[in-house]
Amino acid sequence: MCTEVSDYASAFGYYSGHDEPSVLYYSNVPGSGNRMRYQLTLPREPSPKVVNGRSWTFQLTPAMWFGMAMCDTQSYPQQVSTCTPDSNSNITSDANLAHHAGTAFMELQFYPPGYVKQFNGSSCDPRAWCAAMTIDSLSEDPVNGTTLNTACQNKVLGGVEYVNFAFLTKSGTPIGPPNPLDFNPATSGNPTRKAGVLFMSQGDHLSVSLHDTANGLKTVIYDQTTGQSGSMTASAANGFGQINYAPAGTSCSQTPYTFHPMYSTSSPQTRVPWPRTPTTSHSTRRPGTSTTAPR
Image (cartoon, rainbow, N blue to C red):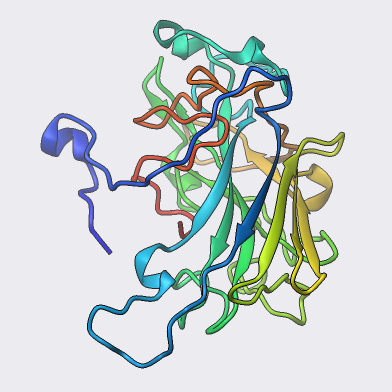
């Protein structure tokens, strides 16, 4: 893996992150920014024999994902206490980003076969694929120049860029609390078939859907090859939550929260304002400063 400096601004004076290529689409049709479906065929891996020039997917990428901008009133930029789901009223100009509604970035991540499990690596099984819903938030106020207090950063999954994390399961129920404060890698981060986590085989044909519901964003994977399916809904009832912004002191608490998509349509303006490069409602590009869930 390529390493990065911890403070790129001090070292270079500009952002210098790793490359995360994206496939984007734009549409002014209402719903294009919060309701979508993809057809996906999982790669087949070469034989285990080591041959010069041969690579396995886990060597090429820790994860591939489908992304979406989400409302999160406790995330950057901390200036607006409300966020209207599925609405282009959240769009602001570049000059007015400090008044943008709080925004998180959802990634429906697919983990290739490998030999080191989450969270020490980026796979679930030596031969099978799995998937997880991750929602990254940034606990930072750019106007007042503050961030979440250090004591709380040390308690939550991901620090200042904390993450809600839940594997997709056959029942739609998380295997453990997904919110950043209650997350436990030994339970929430330990995917097994016994726990009901959806596993997929190499070469399987999948139908992947992401859509908002009254109970929050729902992601569904239907494996057309096996007939099995898995899902996850970003709801308070499923244990998703916000870390309450506390820049001073040592307090650290979370509020149950239901995450909804932020925008109605998809364009260069439907962005997550805190990445160093524009992030649309379905982008797969973020800055390389996070040390949260494997990507």
